Length: 213
Image 1: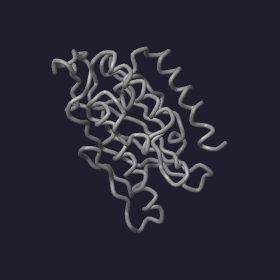
Image 2: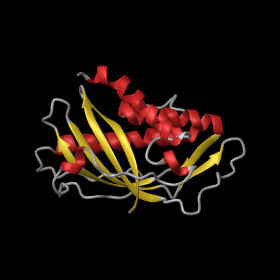
Image 3: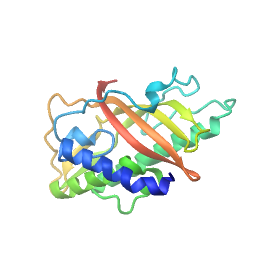
Image 4: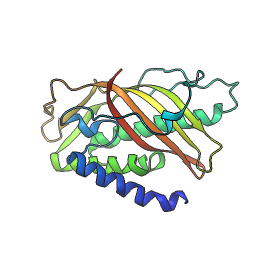
């Protein structure tokens, strides 16, 4: 099945799950639960669960959407860098979208698709309804934990230690902060899936966990 044929159904399925299980969903990378009760559970299963040890050439780094740089001697270095760059750019566009409560005027569709994009759109609808936007940005420690570039649909998995401490949620009209749960986990493991659609890598799934890091 081609990516174009899969995408609408794939997104719709995730949207139904998100609405049924959470109701007020805030989308990407644990905004799903930030305004509610904390990070949702994750059994950690998925493509990355069957992989071997983490790639030693992709050591974690920190900073605002910072990513490790693959070794230039790695035959897959260019592919890995493309995946990491896509994740960086996706987050840059996510921050823009959450900062104004809309994906309009962002390049988010260039870097995300499937459930990841669907969740963000759901979040934007919720943001508009609640009058909420964000200020600041999260930081990241990213590891490329799996890569299968030879597949018919090449895929990669990443593990991110996502730190939302400096990402604040406020009411757009007043600038007042949104009340947060006192036990809210602010720095946690996030599992990410990417796929290559045509010539471009896309982030297709972002799953926060309740595991702190």
